[in-house]
Image (cartoon, rainbow, N blue to C red; front, top):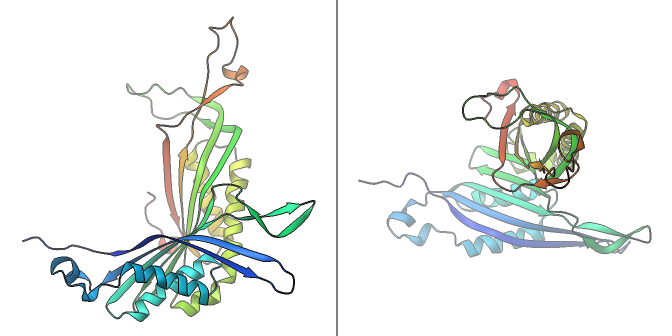
Length: 303
């Protein structure tokens, strides 16, 4: 006899834009987000018995996000995600867990003739600031902050050699190479007892994001990287040292390859090794390196 092992449902890709207008200065601040909500609880009967009496309609979830965005601050995103998640577990007794993800899209204020413009913005990249909150009835709130889509490249200062060589190996050892990746980095905060605890901690969220982003770029740029694995571990270690309230840091870094092009076929033109200047950027396949680093009190195996 089959059984429903697990179930959750919700509303994804809810687009939200909010503007704050400072009446004294005339300066506008804008935030654009994509929000996902997933609910779990006593909802099994809706799957196995067609009992819709336990279903909070996903359209109602969308409307709830809009109302809460009007009534509450949407920045920092960690606080807004926690606000939305708490609402669902506090409003509906049969909903035991609410998971909310907020993706904040970049809108950077324009500088016109050397002055910041009060109400004009540009999107200067695909990088997003993300936040996830999971509220569990009677167990508090877990918050994960993240950087996603930060594309970085350095033209030297990376190497990869002394790896396993066997009958399947064709990759040459490299002592100087281009290193490029798209940073996906997250840090999970020590558990919060309730929404009020998240509110009290909210002033730290912006600074932690700036610190994590700055450390990521500093270590990427300044470290003579023997491997992506070692570089990402250093990033995790320094974020944990810089932000005591963070319990776990994780990275996922695809290795975006740039291959030398042998042009010797054209009149002996040198374009390999120390003479390499023209490269072919690669798409697929690519390396994918991931790790999770925790404090000793929470340490588990790296993945």
